Length: 138
Image (cartoon, rainbow, N blue to C red; front, side, top):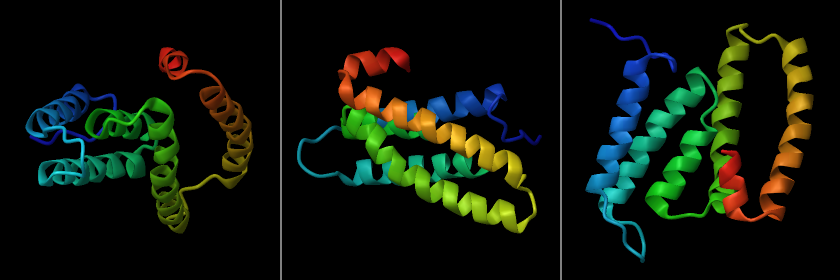
């Protein structure tokens, strides 16, 4: 039986949640450096998140969750670090989708301009106000 990879599919969301929960249990937190278990868990999580980002987009919340859970980053640092990963996922996805002719450039540019303003104000808010206030929004 084939289970489609769809973000609204309950098997998909349960599978990802179970994978993260399992990886968190096998990975022990260390103050200095990354253990082999953490390195493996990070590679596995980011491989899965990269697939989700390439197929559907919206990987930001998953990236922030793994950075705060596995690496103990606070919300602000995790959100800032997520931007680097999202940039590469989005750039590669755009190249692949545009080569396939699957990009509506007019709508995409309008949405990108609107998103730029939202991103700017969201980043300013998260840096200006405390971490607990930002977590309340998410």
